[in-house]
Amino acid sequence: MQVSARIEQALDAALASGESPGHPPKLATAMRHAVFPGGARIRPQLCLAVAKACGDDDEDLSTAAAAAIELLHCASLVHDDLPCFDDAALRRGKASVHCAYGERLAVLSGDALIVLAFQTLVHGAGRSPQRLAPLLNTLTAGIGMPFGIAAGQAWECEPQAVLRDYHRAKTGALFAATTIAGAQAAGRDSRPWQALGEWLGEAYQVADDIRDAAATQQALGKPVGRDLALGRPSITRERGLREALLHFDRLVGKAKQAVPSCPGESALRHLVQLESERLVPKTMAEELVASAA
Amino acid sequence: MQVSARIEQALDAALASGESPGHPPKLATAMRHAVFPGGARIRPQLCLAVAKACGDDDEDLSTAAAAAIELLHCASLVHDDLPCFDDAALRRGKASVHCAYGERLAVLSGDALIVLAFQTLVHGAGRSPQRLAPLLNTLTAGIGMPFGIAAGQAWECEPQAVLRDYHRAKTGALFAATTIAGAQAAGRDSRPWQALGEWLGEAYQVADDIRDAAATQQALGKPVGRDLALGRPSITRERGLREALLHFDRLVGKAKQAVPSCPGESALRHLVQLESERLVPKTMAEELVASAA
Image: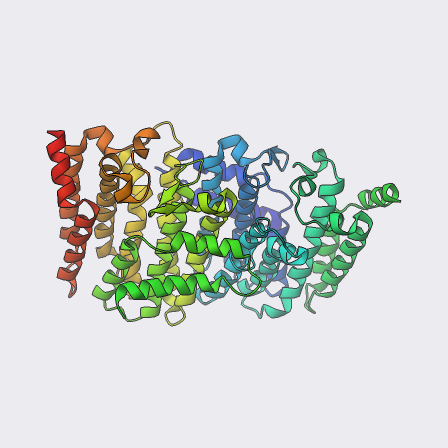
């Protein structure tokens, strides 16, 4: 099965597991709204690519880990879009969950998606129960305290935040969890894989800042200019667009270098390159440099 | 160590695990505000009582399970108090989390407490890794979809809800998870323990409805009359106070009968009795019956 089909099928099965007769229907619908149709699914793609490079001897588990990571990511987007945070009306080109279903169901969708991520992981660990604890440690670190996504969002509530700490928690932590989990799901030493996730996460956040400052709402499918409007730490605000673009290229380079020596090495580097071009298309970068000149 | 000290110490250690240097301080403070000082800690007390009745051969794990359940409970209270739900200014006699720290940190506290619950559980499972998966299934079922707390709260967003389904999900599910987890943490068959948790959960929710309709804000430490004000399903509204009190007594009786035959049997029945008197004190019941006559 194609990797992308494997991911979509696993996400669908995860959501279906919460839809037994007698469940509250609106919450189930709101959760599906948060997960489908997806964005680039870069985290589960990356997780499965790393698992494959590590032998991927338990596809049920690697697929479950990939789906769990995507569910955590979707949960964080739903809560991040809430009126008290970004107050974003759009996400992936359609109404955000709180706009479509109200704030209460948006709060509950996020909660239930976090829980569903762990339900999905444990369900997938039947053949390799000894890999469950390390994977849980990895995923909870990616989303919780002290350095996961929730911590990253909490830095927005502090009077002062170091940009790199903020980025690392808000975006880097789940990317690092993604590459680590890919190796753990395949039963391999995860340490060589951490740096790849960290560099990619940092690159991703810089790209997000660049896109927030430069792209149009239509191209992104979500509101732009939010960092500036909300006074959030942002590399484009701190150092300007041109420097942000150079920094992005450096980070993508670091990510490529961080791919450990393995059979899937070149495929992984290719994935990083493709993803970097998707994040900051060459045409966008050229236009930005021209207009900043 | 006294059971209550064991619970408080475990909760403190769990929170401390998220407070490594470099964490966002306000979120950590808000999470502590949500957990300390506690209420009656009835769920972790019950979990440990069941574990004890089952031999409690791994106290690290039973303590972790008990703390995890309390963290999930606290998370649900924080989100339930949010302006979009109960809009409650008070909880346990002090400001609710969103009143003390703002809505954003209240949303994040709930999220991070859910994650911390699973971090705590996995951390405590070092000596009995084979018990981790069943415990995770139990705890996630108690809080997630289709029948856990989030599902219960979601029934408040539906145009129609069956009172018993609503109660079972909103309160019963985590009580059932509590007794099941107590047995699982001790490595025993959990099936005989499920009914005790279910009856207790139902009794607890009926008591909550009675207290909401009858008690004063001072005695409860949280706003009263909320069910009526918010048009929520409530047994006192559906059947009146007198019938609710009789129903509560019946449920407590069922819970006591459901205690399986075991060495700690009479201690467990005693705990159920004490808890029922704490929930609906005799004087309150007598006053209510007199004033309703």
